[in-house]
Image (cartoon, rainbow, N blue to C red):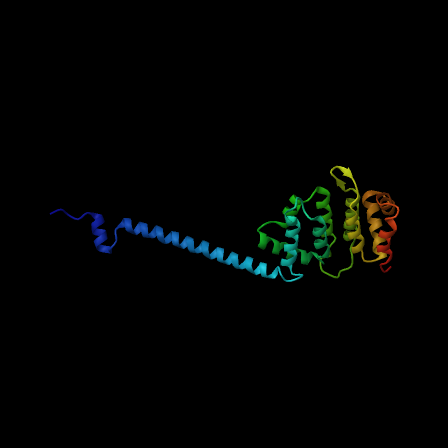
Length: 228
């Protein structure tokens, strides 16, 4: 009578051959990996669902992040809605709030907001947005700092240097946005000082050269209507 081989003995002893054990072990590992991936996807989906729900609440970081993304997408039209993006960034009150928006954008769209911004904008537009960000106080309600005066000055220079298909022009919306943000007439004077330090040029002279004669008084009314 032939003797049982080792595989048969192992199967009789344990009820399962070595080959079967290896197969079931592999299946067990695959199932565990699958469960981890499924679990990760479930958690990720819950995070995204939560962010989506908050994006319908006015003023939340999730809503602001969504508005920034919508400005990039521009309803499917070519380019970015720069006016909308400028408005969104301008209304962010502080760097602390901006950091929350950045984190919300990363969670919702799995992308770096500043990287997307650099890819969506022309160089002068991107520089303007960076200066809008730089001019934010660390916390809401803080008085303007020298860095903020310089940031406003740089934004005005970027608006003066705007080009349209290589044709020199002026971004009047950007000028108006800066003038609206400057809180007082005294702050405007300090912006002029910062402008001269940066460019060795007089802000008012450059402003007059960039605007039409009939436009200049309307822009200055924005400043003169502010407290001293």
